[in-house]
Image 1 (cartoon, one colour):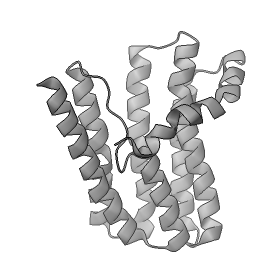
Image 2 (tube, one colour):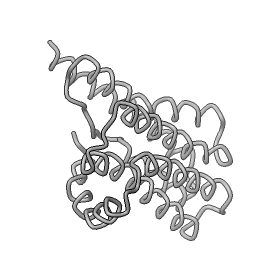
Image 3 (cartoon, one colour):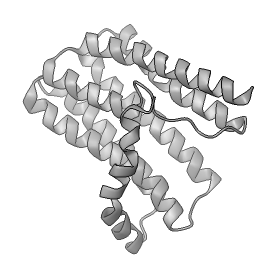
Length: 191
């Protein structure tokens, strides 16, 4: 059930040189969290303002890759430097949810408001399930058929193809399925 999340260790390994440089330069993990939100906003702006097609997909893909890199690096940097804090954990989670919603807001220029809102709400549900499980003492659940990485890929597909409505529908339905699968696993674990 891990989906593209299974690639996270490989991706983290690819970013190890960047992480080492960030440690040397004493960059704050919170700065990386904020940078992830800014990258998400850039992707949303490109999605909303550029004509859909392959030319628009490139900047959206690059900005979403940066968003994912910052999301990977902020926690790793905090652990590497001994700067993990409860405040940082809250900021990380809020930054991830804001970035998710900001990216989907880019669809407001391409799809009905109600569909964007439904996809946005659905996209946050898998994380809320994981956070609720962690609050109950269970390990944090990640991955699934439509997690953060898959949503980013789907946004790139929508940008390249112009299929905003079908992609938002897949994001909404897939996110609901991901939340349900995480909840079912969590329910079994906490029994």
